[in-house]
Length: 346
Ligand code: ATP
Image (cartoon, rainbow, N blue to C red; front, side, top):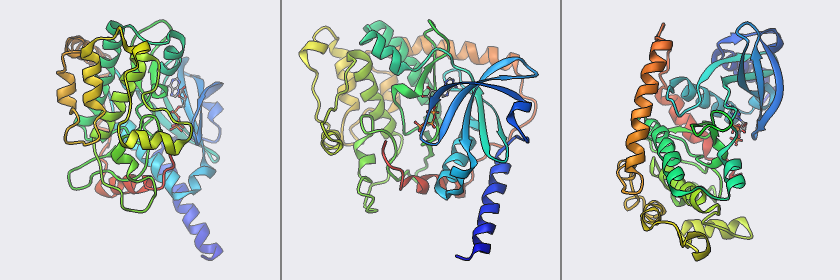
């Protein structure tokens, strides 16, 4: 490729970045006072920030534009932002705006100051069952909402579930960096996620040999099975010295309910986990079946009422003003799935 062609390509990518943004500024500090680091991802740093005019705190995901010169990274960010723009749910992080400068792209989200579920599990060791039911029901509410919109998260894990504030028990789902749009005609492809939580059918793309099987919403159901195991026991169901070993156990759904951690946990909880951690997706519980499972249905009822009340309150506070264009066209969805075929598992 000639230098001219490279430049044209780069300009095209920069134009796509600007098209993603709600605002293009010379310096972010004109709009936000940037604060301390809250967390870090593969290509981003998330910082606390205060909107100078509003005097309100937000979480800002800062992505270096240079990292978006790579087509796959740019496509992934485009998909993440397009999906975030679609979402409005009490248990999903809310996007405020996207701002670009010459060097960075900033995704401004509501600030969730209560920390990661991961840290609560580490602190507590494990959750008592009633608390786990309330927590899992909220997670199910967010995932059910996504699945109804044909969005598959593909990276459900305790690091991606944040508490709204310290001491509170309300959670929200974050990180749509791997999320994909599913349809019958275009199921998802590619290796995405995190080894401990990844579903066997997603692992079929591990060798990147294009012989992987397309997959769908069931992959999130598997991850939720792993998540529930971790919440209740404080341990991972799949452990291996090496990644290869771990992934072999995942592929065969080889795990146990060890006496030490599980002897006081109800048979219903174990039943739910064992019906989610099933290799064959046709035999794995669906979202509907999970919501109705005896271990969790009562907590689901309460979580549903809470979601309805909170959605009504939110609609009163922020009546829709203009229709935001949230349509994700077929091309983009195709790219989103294709871009993941080379994702490396973390
Ligand atoms: P990954 O590489 O895992 O996909 P990422 O670059 O997409 O990561 P996120 O997972 O979205 O980044 O965020 C990284 C960390 O930043 C989170 O684990 C969390 O600790 C913190 N964080 C993200 N969003 C928020 C938020 N809205 N409020 C507070 N902290 C946040």
